Amino acid sequence: MATSAEYGLGEFAFPRGWFAVANGSEVGRKPMGVHYFGQDMVLYRGESGRVVMLDAYCPHMGTHLASGPSSATSKRPSHMEGDNIRCPFHAWRFGPDGVCNNIPYHDGAIPAAARVKSWTVEERYGIVFAWHDPEEQAPDFALIDFPEWDDGEWVRWQGLEYLADLNHPIEIFDNMSDVAHLGLLHGGDAIAYENEYDGHLLHQRQRSAVEAGGVFDDTYSTLAGYVGPGIAFGKFQEMYAREIICVTPIDDGSCRLWQTAMLKRREGQSADEAKAMRDQVSAMFGNGLMTDGEVWAAKKPALRPMQLTSDGPFGQSRIWLSQFYNPRSQAAQIVARVAGTHYARGWPPFTQAEAAE
Ligand code: FES
Ligand SMILES: [Fe+2]
Image (tube, rainbow, N blue to C red):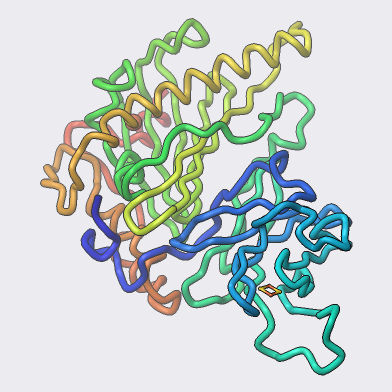
């Protein structure tokens, strides 16, 4: 295990960006403790339906807001009141903004320091995403967009499937520029390949010859990429499948990996058949990712990959990634060093291969 500093990523141990922290279905009225970015937080759903994520520890005496039975405030049926949460130890009440707005036994002023951080969260695609920013500013890029989610032709996913807790997220991220492992680990060689860096977006485009478990056996195009440092996507064009892969730092040097997939309903398919096929494709993608996962789990950190011109552009991708580990004022300058399209020696550029067809 190695830290962000050992990888030379930048000033911050944890990057700026949107990250999955839970499935929406897991978050209810009972507060739930989570640990990401080296910190403890509490997640709950307010009475209004909104998801709230607060720093976990009460400023009064350090109680974890999700600890204790929900009846810990013994005169009250639960911690929860509207969109507020009460600390189980002395019942100080915090609003969804993290500010203490009631101390039941105290008629004086509430100290200004009686507050916890309230995180920016968005619940979308059945997933709760949180904005992490070491500079504590508002998001400077939007969450990933999946227009298929609201298209009735598509069978939505039902939430992220947990795959594994792994080492530093950069080891997963390197996959985005690793053209040479595709044939060995994923069953078919890339026949055209390129990476493009564009602001907070990284694109990987490839055409492969792949046996896809009977769902699609031929050459096909995959448009993949990262939207910020924590959310990756795969658009499997001829398979009409969309995958989301979420990578959330746990501590400096570890991360949680989840994925799931949507599929376009085939002609004449019943709803049940379409769901079964979506599950089959999602499991196939998950298994594919975990063939990498076995390697990631057992490898030593690649602090400085020995990059050949015939490898994909690892170094350039890592420069792109470092924009999120440094102050946002430096992001444009960092991206300018690699902006544009990069190739791997021996693989034809994807865009030209597509245009030639
Ligand atoms: S420790 Fe939270 S109210 Fe006292
Ligand atoms: Fe891979």
